[in-house]
Image 1 (cartoon, rainbow, N blue to C red):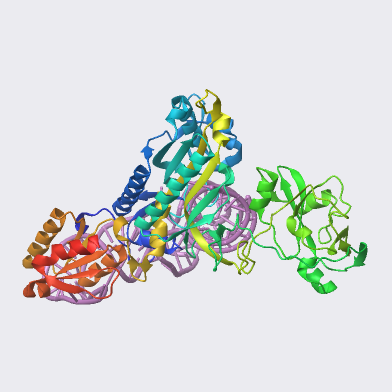
Image 2: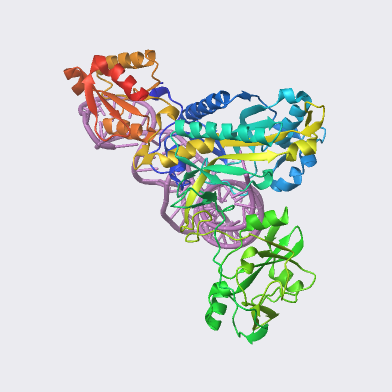
Length: 565
RNA sequence: CGGGGUGUGGCGCAGCGGCAGCGCGCCUGUUUUGGGAACAGGAGGUCGCCGGUUCGAUCCCGGCCACCCCGACCA
């Protein structure tokens, strides 16, 4: 491709819109064009790169036994009402109405439809296992699109679904996909790590995410520096400090004038925060819920939501708190009647806690469970943080930011139960099909890759996903000798199967070099009068500082070796 | 949805109750040519939209919309 003909111009100034490096560079390099918040058009450079990523995914999916299909994006809303996800996804689901007033959705993912298709086409245990995948556009009306291609509302995603007869089969399919994912990310030049994850709205049990550690990431990742424990903050567990067991003392009221926060309370009474209990108040699907957790810990809302099985969980407003008979600042589960209480299991790792008296300006000393109050549910709902103890080895955990580039789930029978997708086994007995699902965001993978591979001058594309292999730069294109030599080299490179972006513009050297650095193709070749006189061309890898020169007639071979390396 | 910010030529920005500007980019010509060239000439704008105030609004007032950032939210 000749740069003079390329659709898309590079920018000299940083675009004001962009905050993230990947976003900035993609706009600056003329790779993407924004149509609306979280909706982008891909220019040729981005599209070529995306297609390469897709191809890598396709190859690895096929190698793992996957079969590619193509599904409708426009789907009847019924399908989503049946699975309950019409409600669960709420406004995130794009809804449209056809001319006959039938309600449709733009599919955000494809479990429902595919399960129906499988139901109609799997008649026997002999048809299992199988893995089906698609690479298609999905629509999600995200509350806040951000960061260029990092979080968008219309995006291409590879979605794979496995169907097995039983859990053992699911485990095998799942492992095969995990391995395929490792291959994909490695081939794309991405250092993705695997972490335990929450399965969220999609449901299911085991779930892991592939994360690229990056400051620009939206997810908080908890890592153990000593062992291999790694989890998304939404899911991460940790060893909670157990306080020395004391004999239970009688409950006593103490005056705590003006004390509102846990920190103030601990200071005022001269006890550690872990010796206190705090209350946090939520509305879960309209029901007021009193959450109790040890004072040194914070509530993890994802865990809480899972414990409650709620669809809509939010903090209660001050009015709702008051209406429930709770005194904020001195809130207490002690003596609370008719209110759902959910407690973190940390409240059992100690005794004689300080807790609110539900009376402004007063707290209780020596509260004990279950003597003084009982919780409807006691489970782990605490948020892991840096410095807490690793659940496996006890080392001090670290937190990082990360970009989620892939997610794998063991769905189990959630969708097959709903859609009654069953198969008869050897004995003719009917069982629900065991499902797994596996997603990779293609555009996000590109953005994440650029986020990881860049320097102050621009992108450094990993070879397998670079839009072109080579940037051929002709300097002094008015010089016929240069033009002829560059044209010839362009043809030779192309003939050798090296995709080449040929900068044939009559720009100055500085402009061309800067654009070449910005676009970040793996290899740059320079043809110039100076070099021509010596019968050489200059070759430089984007990742290295210094160019090397080679005789013109060896250029193609040398470049070939660099690209294949 | 809450908080903050921004809308002026392709991009980055300034401006101001009275002719809409600058830099970059773009077009033409001349001279240049190894890290974002110089000179000369030129094109390009419904100043986000609607309404109000005013002799007159890009500017002041009201409403709306869009986009960005933080939070909520989010396979």
